[in-house]
Each structure stands twice: as C-alpha cells, then as structure tokens.
Length: 245
Image (cartoon, rainbow, N blue to C red):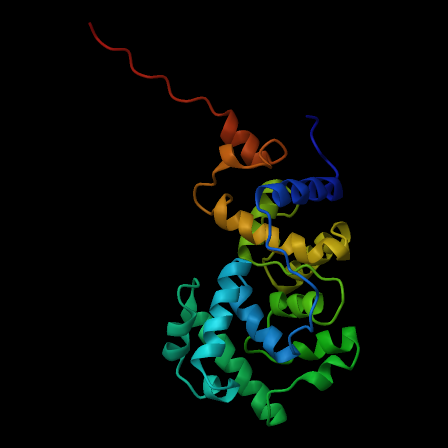
C-alpha cells in the first residue's frame, strides 16, 4: 500500500479503519443535547477517557448526589470516590467542584442557558472566563456537542495517537497557543460531520491499542500508515541463542 502523505486522506483512512475495528454503539435518534453546564461537567469526565468510561462516571455522579449544589458543597474526596475508576479522579473532582462554585458565584444558579444564546464565538469566548474546570478540551467539546459548531477536542490520549501518526508535532500542546493552533489544524482536515465519531474513535483506539508505554502495533489497523507502527512491526526479533552440543 503506498504511503499516505496527505493529512486529510490519512485521517479519513484512519477513521474508516477504526470504525471497522471498534464499532461504536448506535446513538439512536438524536435527542435534546445536555444543558451547557451539564455538558461541561461531562467534559470533565470525558477528557482522557473513553465514551463508555465517561458515560458510566457521569451517570454515577448524577445518581450519587441530589443536585449540582450538593456536588458543589461536597469534598473533593467524596466526588472523586464517585468518579472512580476514571483516571485521575481527584483532579476531575476538583475541576467539577471548582466549576460549579464559579458558576454559582456568577449566576446564583446552575444554568448557563443564556450563555448558549449569545452565538457560537461569543459563548466559547465567555466560557473561558470560568478558569476552574474549563480548559481548551472542555470548550471544544461543548462547541462540538452542544453549540452546533465545528471543533475537535484534543486530550492527551488523542494527541498521542496523532503524534504517532505524524499528524501533529511533539510540542503540539506545549502551551495554550500551541494547543489551539494544533486543534485548528486538525479541524481543518476533519470535516464537521465526522468530528464526533472521530473524537470517540481516537479515544477508544488510545485506550485499547495505542497505549502510552507499549502500543500494540501488530494488532493496530493503522500500522501500515503509522510511522511508529511501521517501525515497531518491522523490527526483527532477536535471534535465538544456539544450543551448545
């Protein structure tokens, strides 16, 4: 198979291959999107996790507490215990509590519906005023899933896959400006209609095969187009020592 040099072609091929390797659950008929605040809380669960992991953690959070105010006044440990086994539950709990506290202090409720009515760019800009719990991933997630805009949220696992594919540079998330530029470059080659599925497939692939320390390149459907996969699958096994007679 000839090498793929065009990033858009590469990511389209990768998404098609991952769709076959990791069929996602049927989303069913599109329902009402989560309210903006709830989507931000969900994003705190979803960043660095798979869709299934985030869904389970968010459902546990909703069951464990009466309302968002109870979450706000709970301890980090109490919320973290509910979010486990998500990686880094303490950090996620701190983000969620901090976000709820900021929103409550600014609005005296837990409704950001008015913000969603201000237009895509204005809403995204104002979301960044909430320093606790709202990072570049969260804003991009809300734009993609709730506000109807085009964005591709990039978390650590997704960036790991894209680095190995040669789509982004090693310092793609070196600082906020670099991350924003990287995200813009990915959004340029991933069409809006494919964005949600692309985001989910990247997360599942990073969890199942393209893991951090020892990626399972022989089982990866992208190995023939991935520089790391090509290198790892072309290594010759060490010769077995000859038996002495």
